[in-house]
Image (cartoon, rainbow, N blue to C red; front, side, top):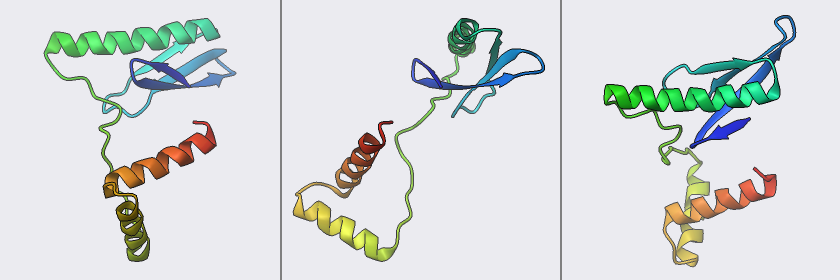
Length: 111
């Protein structure tokens, strides 16, 4: 994976074409890039992000943000109760409790 200005790109190698092909994830637009070497694919990714941001600026549009910071999670009523009790015991909001739990899991996974 490649990262630049909050955007993430994934890359695959096409053995027949002898090229790396990439795509920027988690945006509403389709943004692709390619290169013949690792350095070329990195450069093409950064240029694609920069071109996308410049294109949006020229048009006066907000670029698609990879993540809003909000998502809906559905859990069982029993788990919901346990989360609520845990948050209350720690004197924090339900949101803060869930955020901490997710952060701890992510750290364990080294993401």
